[in-house]
Image (tube, rainbow, N blue to C red; front, side, top):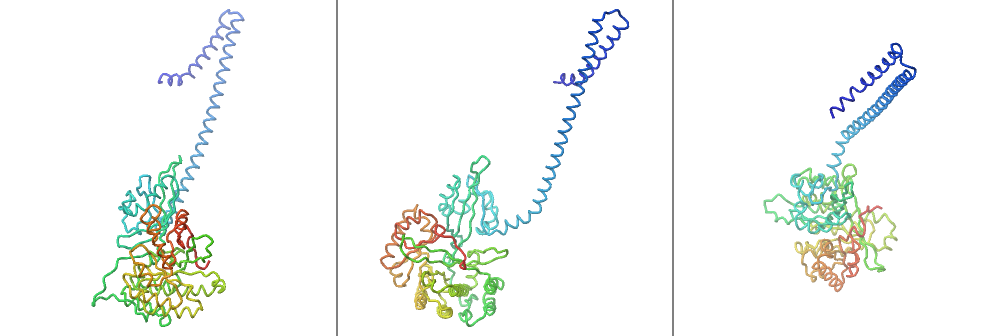
Length: 505
């Protein structure tokens, strides 16, 4: 290799020396010898050929140099262009870094990236805040450790489906360490590499918790020296107190100004929004009317929606749920009075409203309901109040009184979360409810758990005997709809039926 490089370095000197020697030999032959014309012609031809070859070599070298120079110039321009683009991209990335961080930190949707081994490789703030876990307890951990074995068993099928390259969408119930139960709308999107191979999936979840889904652990009754008290019923009466008076009263009683003020100011400024989700009849050509469940969301900055799982515990902790329930009833009736009354009666639609435990125990609520129905001229049959099944055991007497009094207003009553606890049907018959809403956790598992399937069948059979209609919650697939229809369940609601929409649409 070194000999070749040395030859390339001296070959041009050798050629020049050869040409010079040939020219010298020709001159010597012409002037100093008696060589004949053939010999002189031969030498002349060699000289001309050597000169021509040297000229060609020089010309080719110049062409190669010009070509290489052009290539270098082109590469230089390309490098400068790419450098400029890279600088612009870096500047753009730097300028967007703060906004991207803000998006990651303020996005209400919970986002996590799960790899093929089931380990979490990325999560946003909403994800860890909802789980109440520090980042180090999420990063690199298996989702079984993050969610818990029981919750993972419920979503294991969907996880395998996403790792097989198929998107998944479902609703999931999650019990938190403090005993509260939340509902999530989950979408799993597979992630593919350049070769088209699945290398994980994105876990996207939105909190769609309804009021009746929250079941925090019961607190012991406050002692005689306790400072914890409920807001007086008189202060909650809609016609006897202004929002400002309620705000002052809430601040005085709770002793935590900012927490109570946030909810009250939100009501005062109209920051709450009402949504509804379709409750569809299942039997084909049944002629039954479609009903709707009323949902509430809190508007945050930049038109973001705060899910109920975020503000319901706050309102419950500060005794503000009765006032929030009154706000919902008033605005639903106000909306109903603004639409065509003939259309409202013709559809025979019923609007289901969840009521909090504190509202069930509020003796002034039925009077408020009666007054508001008369004010807007709406029949009570338009409303159906959902009483959680758990309230039958904890508030037996007050629950009976609440049901009886709202029924006197012409309203209907539904028992929500049915099947989660063991409540005898005899007690339900005595409560005179029109609907049983079968708990969503049972519905979600009925296709893969024979026990839950048998429970749904049993509930439906007994409900038919006592003349109560059934509503299946968290229905998310056509397969579930078909199974519920074959069992004979009357109604179904969930993302498999319809997503929530604004009540005003």
